[in-house]
Each structure stands twice: as structure tokens, then as C-alpha cells.
Length: 176
Image 1 (cartoon, rainbow, N blue to C red):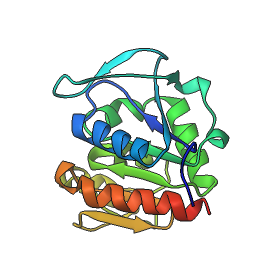
Image 2 (image 1 turned 30 degrees about the vertical axis):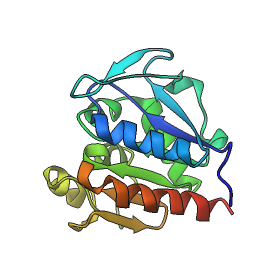
Image 3 (image 1 turned 90 degrees about the vertical axis):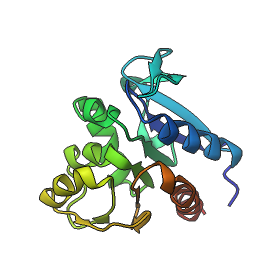
């Protein structure tokens, strides 16, 4: 299926991992997807861990799951902030309930843990949150990309090519 014109919601907040934001956003745009950057506030500049800026399109409360074919959760330190917003948890839970693809990499698993959707899933992440995922009921494996039903997980920036190849494949398959 052609992904041109379909929309993916991508969470953003301060101290996202720069490569884990920009590489996926650009890859999705190359596939014709519209990526809406959604943060605590609309039209606000957020900065990555290394200072690279990105501007949000919408605030969390301005969007709804039904407008999107998938969710992307960035890594870095942003997930520790993102998981504290009730709207982020509500949206993440809704994407999961609707069985829409959720892509998450590095520390992004924290958002899924706080949304209570990882139990019974096999996932990967940065090794730093392995215990968190396992304590939340996930099975953790050390692989560059893991697909379990609607969740695509990756470890860290060097795994982005394999991760994005699979995330885009899953977005396509789930939207035939």
C-alpha cells in the first residue's frame, strides 16, 4: 500500500535523541507520510540532547489517535518527561488498543511502560532500561529491532536503518 498522505504522530519534548528524531522523521517523509510532531505545546521549538532543534506542530491535547495510522516515540531523555503527561499515556494506550503500529527506540520504552502496554511483549531497548521493561512484564532481547504484534522496538542510533525499515514495513502491512 502506498503511504503517501497518511499520517504518523511523533511525540517530542526537550532532550530527545537528535538522530532518533530526525532520521525517522526524514525516512517517513521520504515514504510520503506526513509526520505530525506533537509536544506539550504547539508551534514550540524543542531541542535534542545535542542541541538540534525541531518545532512541534500540535500540543498533546490537540490530536486524536483516529487521525493517524501509527505512533512514533523518540528516545533520549525526552521519554522520561513524556511519560508524565496524562495525554501522552492516553494517546499511547489508544494507539495500542486500536492495534496501530507503535515504533519506539532506546529509552522510549519508558512511555510504553507508563502506559501499561508492554506486559507479554518481546521488546528491545537501550540496555539501560532492560530492567524497567522486564519489571513491567516484557521479555527483553538484545537485538537491533524486534517486532511483536503492533510494537516495533529498537535499541539505539546505530540500529536506526534496520529499525526504520521494519517500522515502515509494519505501517504498510497494518494499513493495507
